[in-house]
Length: 554
Image 1 (cartoon, rainbow, N blue to C red):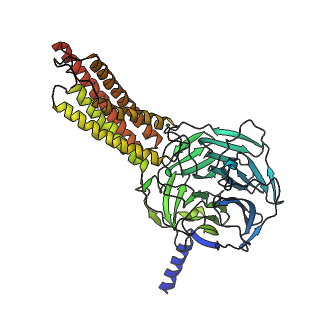
Image 2 (tube, rainbow, N blue to C red):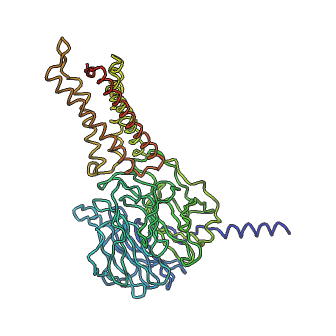
Image 3 (cartoon, rainbow, N blue to C red):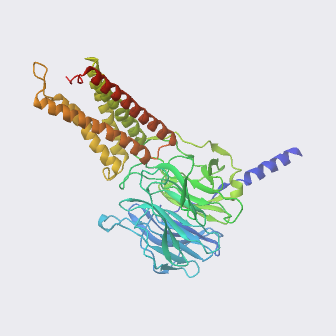
């Protein structure tokens, strides 16, 4: 009698958790949309179906519209009319069942092999779920999003038909950090956040290929993305994540829980008008040429975010799971979150399968833990920072410090100075190589990168001009050439050291480094300043009392 009861309790416990269910497997038949990635998806509650638009497969870009019937699990390509959107991928999308509409905005057309035809979009289009007609929405405002792709956003589809459509960040030659909302009643854009410079730690830096979802009508959560290139630097992919409250124009940085991601997807668990709210992050690209070490997420792992506590949890979904993938899309339905398409991360190629993460927000907490928050990832941005910190921040500073304040320890000071400068310079050259590899492009189009090149030119020039320094006269006096050389060598070196301290500080801010790293660096910087002030005071006092000058360089 006891065994059936225990079995029933176990079954009930398992089925009160989130679980994956395959609705449609990948199929190359013409009765299915072509396998693809970076498309768009929305849920049509009235007709109990999914709407799919666009995407890409290799060099091919799509502008087809498909419907997937959630009752029969069958696909149908829709014969749509009106202002059908141009071919595009990596757009922002979302359905509003209160209005019976589906929206796509921004995105990219690759040119399909002809780079001269590549273009980005700044538009927003509406698909009527009843008439199956597309409509390009007119813009009655002077504000529009810059043409871009790889943005995040969408609409909070609580069925009331009164919410706006958001987009945030993105890329089109430069990376953006602003946030805009399209008012569907006024039919116009408004800028909710004008963006920030990439050295301000209080706001998310410019990026693209991140993911996000609306957790309330005017509340957005954003995760990861690519922060490098496009006139900025940073991790690519990144794992910093943020919540934006548009009613207060306030960004809040959230704890880092999962691995770095780009080309990932997020969606809210139903019901959207319930007392509990949970968003789910699934899959995405964790690696790039700048990533040295990162733990791979498991196919059955999801990250669950609670907007009320601003806390993440890593959860395991038991049973069969979708293949690990990138470039997939997800949307909220009445029965859970639906996932569509993507490119398999383990050799599966392009996909057009559909999976349902079945369950509600209340059930998400019941799934077993996949481990504590945090990941031991390491990339070239961090290695670049370590090399530059030790090279410019410690060794080269120490070499200059000894040359300035310990020349009376002859010849020890000169040997130490030379050894520290050479070893420090070698480390900084290694750091420079890491920097060039870690930033995808536009290495010199942002302050930290351009200033870094100037500093490195100074650093490399110093030992070269030291090797050809004019010698003193036999009586120990300095020639005019020697006097000029010392003046240039000393002051250019000091300039390089000061600029290096500034640039290391900028680099920490640009890399979205943890607060602990800032604390260590600025404490060390303060120590440098105090040490220089104390030693300079002692040197000047000693010179005044002895009425002598500093011992000249060899």
